[in-house]
Length: 180
Image 1 (cartoon, rainbow, N blue to C red):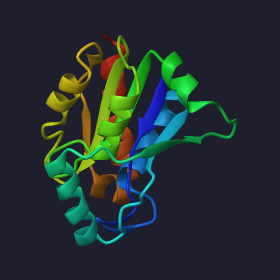
Image 2 (image 1 turned 120 degrees about the vertical axis):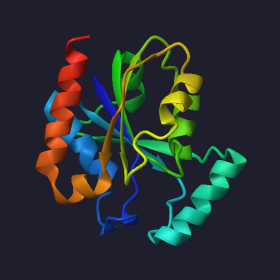
Image 3 (image 1 turned 120 degrees about the horizontal axis):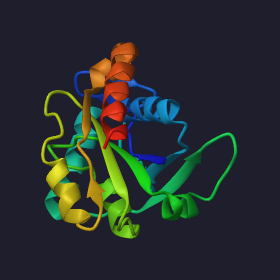
């Protein structure tokens, strides 16, 4: 398994200003729970740290179906090649925040640029009340030849302020997937 995620630090809705984005924190929990290595999706052009400024860019990207340039950053004590790890993984836990009810466009860039055919995708997201929104349909449309498993939505405020509850949600979600 490999954990691949996108997250944005700064001012987050209903969470406040955070040095580490909620999805990044949730990705760490998934990685710790599975022993899987982590790869972060990093946009070449960082998003503003202010919520309103970031939201303006996010909405424009969604309206234009933009595909911002990205790079992959390995988060591991032992370096590895992210592209080779993605190609070799048969299961990818894919993490993202819900942005205006959709997948963030850097995640769409990642999906467009990587062949995930035949892989099992375990989506997890942070949100503040929208659950998975329409991202499961977006993933199925973008990855028709992948096995998209039921996703895990966790409130960003829970991840930031009650990590024990987030860990419990991850444990149940992973246990559900181990029996399938």
